[in-house]
Length: 264
Image (cartoon, rainbow, N blue to C red; front, side):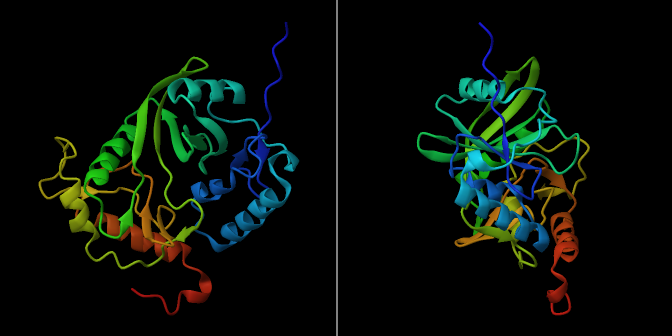
């Protein structure tokens, strides 16, 4: 008996990175939040693309491209995820901006809840993120929400060893980039909560716990305040480095019409 043909991803119009399961209907609408768009033009394009999903449903969207990574069919990916996460139903995926990067964010449902699953190569990045998020789940940052880890581990996908991290979904319905947020106590608040992270032997004596990639596309405004994502680079670094990165990134993505009056 011949094998059934593989399912074909559907593509959000205007985006080559956002793919939805053909049977997801309109259930993949929260996928927009996983894109982390910070440029106003990209946000506008995403808005129109997801409006098409809301009106047409997944099956009537254009076919999506074959995944560049991982080297597996849609069916193999779904089977591997259900094996690692029983009851997981795949709704959509966001591929990396950087071509060739071994990373993918997936949206799904499990036990009736929206769940985000990160897939990565067999390295330490998702483990670093898991450790940081577990510490923050016990002692949250004031005024800044973070995802809560649900499960983590390794899986084999078509012969390729991968790591995964499943977390709760935070503010997937409504969020936008947080540009020029004050963050006056961020470094001290984070230092208190992530002090238990392993400190590498090569770290400087005055190094402090850091997020490692504090930018407006990772720090998001929501209807309930701020939310901070992508803790893969969490660890130890120079004092002030997070805020320096954030201010520089805010300047890069700040809309042109608001630059003259932006706060320092």
